[in-house]
Image (cartoon, rainbow, N blue to C red; front, side, top):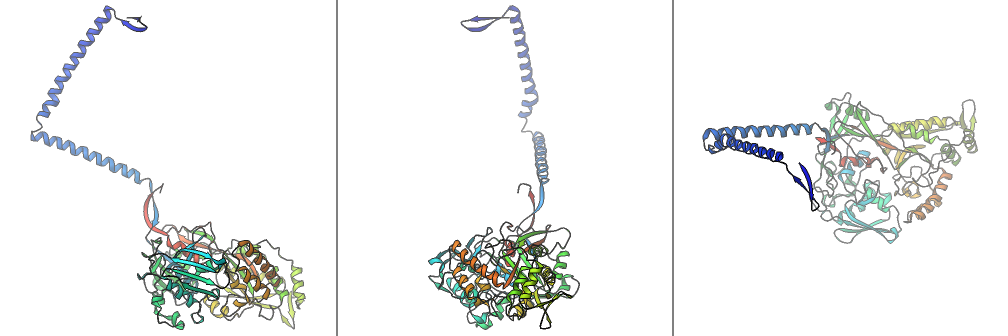
Length: 605
């Protein structure tokens, strides 16, 4: 075979041999084609022609059935293969048993009288507030759809969400806001917010809009609205102020929050749970509210409130409780349990009672406040850091501990003489001996013991009393029967220090635990709470802090924390760990979206 180029195109020139080969190939191709046709007519076409035959139809049906079975088995096998990529996980929903510790024998869930830690925590879930903080610590509306701060901080206008409802289906109105704040200010109601609401007035603009006003600007008025729990006016009509704390409503209250009460509060013996030793616990159920605007809660809660914290720990170790909140210094209780640590925007202080004969002496107070190893106190008490200022975020520079000699010199200047043989200061034949009272939690206990040991080094005897929170509130907060109170207070960025250090709060019901009275400090605090501009407010607060350190009504100790202790096999709490929470009560916010329903999840979910 030759290739010849004609007109620029390559052409094939076939020889005789090539032509013969081509003819033979054509013959072979025709024979194969004819054989294929014959085979097709014989084995396929003939059978197709007999499809009407019953036996043939049965044969085809059998083949079809087998084919379908093979396909189904393949799909099932593939699904099983995909299931192997899943793992058992937890999603929103299900039910959780939550443990709490509270010595109070009677849980009263009244938004106007909430006082114990458990009442405040449950109230946080059942009742809504005008405003709240989101997971990033930003202020937003809760019952209020929107809010506006006007007139330099003298007025906040709140607009309620449209058709916001109570758990009984009634619509909340501006009258409920007016009623709530008016009752919180009444002395006979005995609300812990009474002092903070002095001078606050509420006026209805329409059924959904209210103006909350003060005669003077209040920088923390918006923060105050996050701590007010709104009460349903229609359920308190006709109840006198003195009876509000004891009405039947307390046992089965109606709120407007993410969870609603699902049962009466019941009291039982811990023996019914299989817990050794005598004890009592209260139980109540909370269900997700369909009326709540956010509708975030999807998990049913059973709350078990134990009068003894040891019973709570036993309940968790035996699986009777699945999750609880502990102080920052507490450790894991059960093998396999897990913890999540949350920082609090609070501060623990040793408050010096300035009405005490010994602690009325400023030299002694300065010696005690100066001779403290704050980082050590924080570490032993489960804190997240030492605290040097009465206001978080303002003048928080580290102060070095004064020397032993400097502390003893201050006490000597205060009028005491050191008995060197016993290393105890004495005056008028009496040893310098002070009482220190605190709560019986692990973190407070560790802090109190550390302070007592440290102050013993400078010749001061400390008698420590660790009491239950109910006794602390009933016998010490009101009567101020202590020399030193070791306790924590809220130091949220928006909190008003006026409530803790002003002369007007130095009352039996007030939160000025030191009884600190200083006209100059009062003036700085009064002006600071009127400054909306942060820079102007900070200038006044820094002046207050400088005078506060000179007067030494208390010693700032540490920033506390709490831990969520939980069984990872049955529950999954997911709190935001990047933003400090305001207080112990707000640490229970995680219960509104805790995961407890088991499901097989893909790795990518």
